[in-house]
Image 1 (tube, one colour):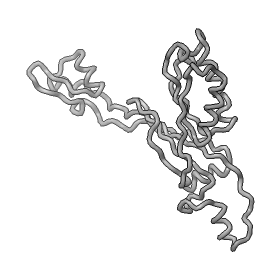
Image 2: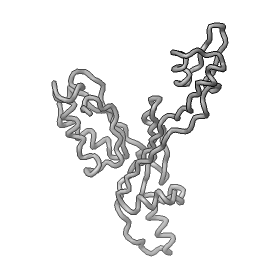
Image 3: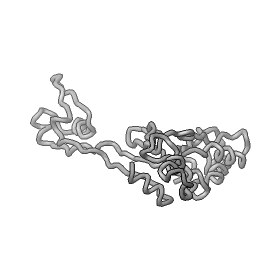
Image 4: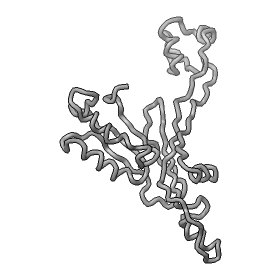
Length: 217
């Protein structure tokens, strides 16, 4: 896919391993006559990610002219007070819905917002806790596709008085049709029940601690 067709970039982490290509994306989008229509006035790419993205986006923009608005950054959950926070969908276009879930590894899932280091000291009777991994926040994304329509039954449509032709296509698409005599036929009368669309979980389990946090939630 050409870079000029990219509309959204959803980052799981704001470190080099996950987001190291952001400066290159900015350069490609700003290249006149190349892959980037943004240099010709197209809308900026929406880049979303966990805390730290804002600074990364500012650094990436420094690679291109300040006159070229190539990306717009949305940083999730700065100052989050819960280990796992489900946020509002960031993509919802009728075909797909993408919802971010912020993981803040510095907080324990059952601590009610109390930092893990403080809770560990209390559990240890005031003794210094074992060293904690210095983990950056990460984001898990749920990707939900639109519901799958039920199978169209031509015999039921004919029995309801719907003639073969374009009206069949409207019923298959889930739209009600109006017949010549004014009667309305709904797709429910001519289609089997639909089923929920597929749902995919995009989880960047960079460390065992992130994976454990997901299991605990």
